[in-house]
Amino acid sequence: MATATAETGFDLALSEEQELAQRSARDFAREKVLPRAAEIDEHGKIPPEILREMGALGFMGTYVPERYGGSGLDAVSYALIVEEINRACASTGVVLCSHMSLAVDPILHHGSDAQKEKYLPKLARGEWIGCFALSEPASGSDAAAMRTTARRDGDSWILNGTKNFITNGSLGNLAIVFAQTEPGQKHKGIAAFIVEKGTPGFSVGKLEKKLGIRGSDTAQLVFESCRVPAANLLGELGQGFKIALSTLDGGRISIAAQAVGIARACLEDSLAYAKQREAFGKKVADFQAIQWMLADMATEIDAARLLTWRAAALKDAGEDHILAAAEAKLFASDVAVKAARDCVQIFGGYGYLKDFPAERHYRDAKITEIYEGTSEIMKLVIAEEILKE
Image 1 (cartoon, rainbow, N blue to C red):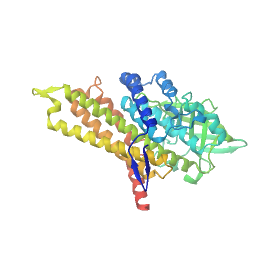
Image 2: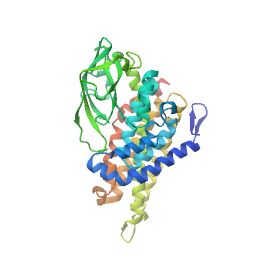
Image 3: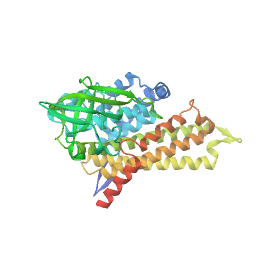
Image 4: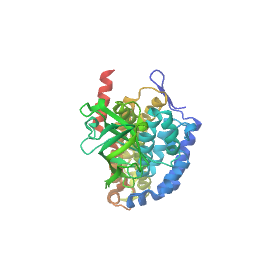
């Protein structure tokens, strides 16, 4: 089993269960997702049957306990699944990442027994899709500056505000929404709420048109005197900021795995093209300049994958994974962007055309350096952790 502890290090051997999860995700991704990846990107929509099948296969509740309808696997298995789906299609992959890491995870770890019983089975089976509403028009990395407010009114909370850049925003059946209950208290006054679609005062604003991951749903969420039952407060009052940060620590592992998947797509597509494309009377793969680019890709992808596995294994072990997750996301996202750039270069002029996958990888890779903590924020997190040590 892939495990990691501060004392004993990291065991790279996957368990039979983990290998089965990886194989199942790879077969599904190759047979059902990859053939439709260009179509998903072009039309900006993921076919509902793909999401339904991911639910049926247990991917939408990978590490949710079986008693709540999940697969009962671990975070390493989840990282393996995320890599495979994103190797085929990053748009499909980010729907899974946001649903599992940012909506399911906080309910699983911070929800009451009643909340878990009510929401986890639907989410784990993929019957419901979840989203995470933290960013706002005027606050991204500086989440404590949020302006969305929550005011107690009897047995309810009244939410007012706008959230931006919400993956699964219009697709989702529920949102984990963060709001200020004590304006002026910054992070100390933030609370988290579970808000269901259809709640009066909760609406979807504009859908964003994006550079990459175009098939995924990125929307603005609007709350206008939205009345949320007090029972839907997630965790303790005033603990919302801590819930957001701990959720993002785990989410960064999934984005690192996504970046590895995108980078692997770049490598595999580049290899296939270089082996069949000829120039100056020989295969492109025979040129040392191309070979070195491919060698760098392969080496850096392996390193990024190992950092990702380590972070996931630390999470499984219940150990502090803040530093490991930040390192994995920082490095893997950089690897994905570099691999995508080299992929376009290896394809040459064809890499600039939509008829080939290289340009899609190039557009998809960039977002991994931005969401769930920019690369600059990752460096701040890493520096804080190593200075603390």
